[in-house]
Image (cartoon, rainbow, N blue to C red):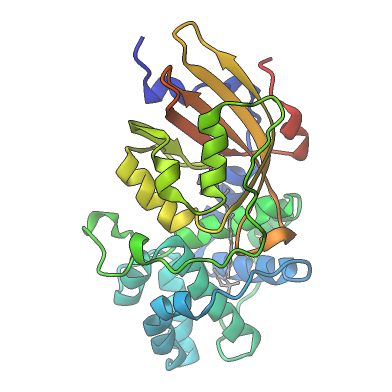
Length: 322
Ligand code: EQ3
């Protein structure tokens, strides 16, 4: 039987526990624009007491510099308007430019604005703002999440801001191929060991990703293979996966711990592996508990891999089908 992406998506689905991240983002989405901006400020400053992101570096900030310079020259009222436009995804020139940024440039842009807010050079929350009960509800929900989940909520809200440029054709902004590299702070682990897993494609995948060697990782996929990032639809085809990896998977530190492998009658293999991933934004200070669900074809190529955020650390052990 031919492998399909639709059936691949369901592998090990009965070992999965729903993550609290989408529920928290759904609460956030219900807030009005000023409440959203205020929530992000309170959540970010609260989190900042224990963890803060690494400064993005000059090369990455350069990509956002034009917008940042414009905003710095504005009056406080105009600055607030820009932030409201971004949060409400309005169609304005700034919101369009932001919409074309890559994920990491969006994060760098807000990192810099956050710094200017801390220095009092930009107003952190709209003038005269009063915290609504809704903001308290989302903040309380956020406090119950672990740090890896909290930074995922923050990241996803930032990524969704700005005008939706997906319909506007190719971006005029530098993307995938020109993304500045994140310097690696931890030594690359060259021989990957995962309890219960010896599948060469999986070990090769982790090894390549940990060295930012995306060409080597892509070569392990079938031409029609797919990668499904957390809470997203599958990205199909080697070219599309390569572009995604260059933009979003740089500098990640992947530490798979254990897994199981089930061989199917047609010779394909289904594997579930759990472990921890660190993002270069927070380095070794924050670990995200995740799982990889791989479908390997009978020829040993990756046909499908889904990356899922785990609901709790207990789920790291939850490999068996119920
Ligand atoms: C200034 C402030 C605070 C207030 C204002 O009102 C509004 C905003 C937006 C503000 C600023 C907020 C800021 C600065 C937020 C910064 C957030 C950051 C830096 C978040 C970074 C998060 C990174 C994450 C969650 C990375 C996760 C990566 C994962 C899970 C990778 C998984 C992958 C694996 C394992 C693979 O095998 C394949 C690739 C893939 C990438 C899917």
